[in-house]
Amino acid sequence: MCSLLPPDDVLSRRIRTAVDADRLRGLPAEPGAPEVTFLGAGESYTACRIGSGDQARVLRIPRRPPHEMPRSMEAEFEVLRRVPPELGTSAIALETGADNPLGAPYMVTTYVPGRALRAADWNPRLATALAHQIARLHAAFAAGPAPSPASVPSACEQGEGLLTWWSSHHPVTLADPRVTALLPAWRRGLARLDPAFAGVAVHPLIHGDVVVTNVILGPDGVPRFIDFEWSGPGDTAKDLALIGGRVTGGPWYLPMTPDDLAAFVTEYSRYSRYAQRSRLAQCNGATDPQQLLERRDAYELLDRLGNLLYCLSRPGEARYGRWADEIARNLTDRLAG
Image (cartoon, rainbow, N blue to C red; front, side, top):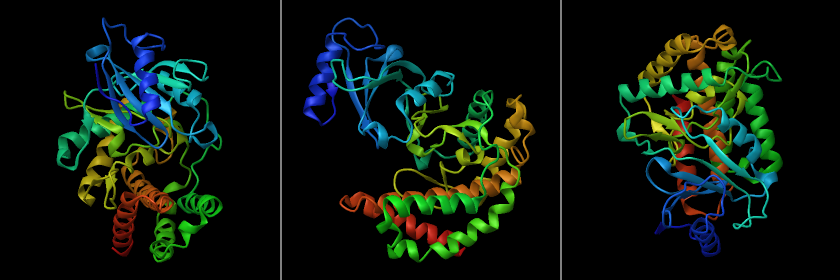
């Protein structure tokens, strides 16, 4: 039976009808009517769990037109083909056209049981487990074509690129007093961290969005990854920055002290040297703990300002206003400190 479906009645009926008629690719073959459970509606996809137990699958349906997606369905699906099941969700089936019972493209992936991380979960054991999982993911993705450009842009270059994009697409966000007040210190903070980016090679593939809501803590206590739509070539340090830190706000980040961050990055560095048998292990700064920590700190500044601007671009939604206040306040405190 259907325990919960998306609030869109038309889509709900289409999903239920298509599942009952067994007319969607990649779904489990179960006797009777498989259970359909609404998992959530993110920025790009609506997700439902189809079936139960070990055979459960996730049906993901785009909420945006293709040109507004951060990564095409095809590109993300190819990444999911490479994700080992012990690390996260994997590819099952892809339908890129709308000529199907849903009347929309869809993707089917494996289901990762468990729940999203919470602040109360954070402890040294979990930090170690997550650091190891990120290192294993980077090792699994290390065998790929050489990215172009080959070197990671500096912190300042990435910062100016971020501001240029928002200036072009949502210029009003940059005029908000919460942003204008912190931009000078934000730029100075990035400049101080620029030296850590010198000569760092781009990794063939990173997750790109290791926030709390994309890390599932399994019943076995092991964290695993979902939602690879922001994956692509990049700096491995970015995957260490988005889970949390000193700048929090909204549902995305865990509060982490400087000691937490140093231990987390050091454990990733140590395990990377063991896990990775690839060119990554030879890259300048790829596993050096101090350089990783400094680059992680830069990505915290880059990500949090980007998320602040994103929240400000949704003025009609009260929760985004609250989250913008939280991020702006904590980012200001971090820069002042």
